[in-house]
Length: 176
Image 1 (cartoon, rainbow, N blue to C red):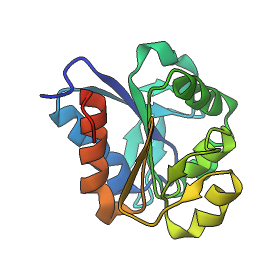
Image 2 (image 1 turned 180 degrees about the horizontal axis):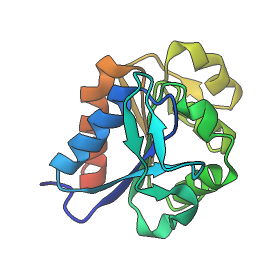
Image 3 (image 1 turned 60 degrees about the vertical axis):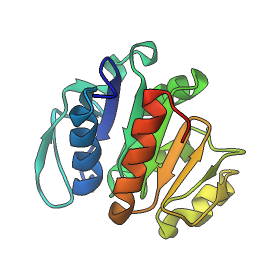
Image 4 (image 1 turned 45 degrees about the horizontal axis):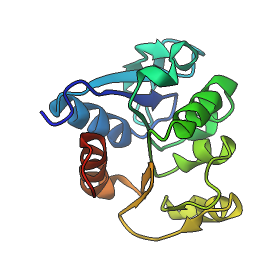
């Protein structure tokens, strides 16, 4: 239970990629973290890409960045919706300014792009948004996981084991 006492948000919105939500959510719980499904605030229940209902346990606007240890931004089409909500972007900015973990996978960097926090970072993502990441001032790298300071990124569901290993190590306070 390496993450006992840690409090982590996993963002949720309609169209979230099922594995990219559930794998981090359950893996972090397995390590003892308090894991919270945080929605945009638009509604309480969201449908994943495969039609699975996911209940938000909290709305992002009700979260204080000072009371969490990090955020996971899953992919799918949810990031395109999440980045349209100012409270989501503000929370990402606040967590980032505090140097806390922000982990994104697949299309997740769209939220980080809209929060304007990627300039000077190295990261990876699904190849479809590679140009968006570069245009946001980041250096794109095509590998299963990239750790650059407080941002951890991965490409797609097959990279989830490496993504989660890096997140657990980072939150446990050890070098990756």
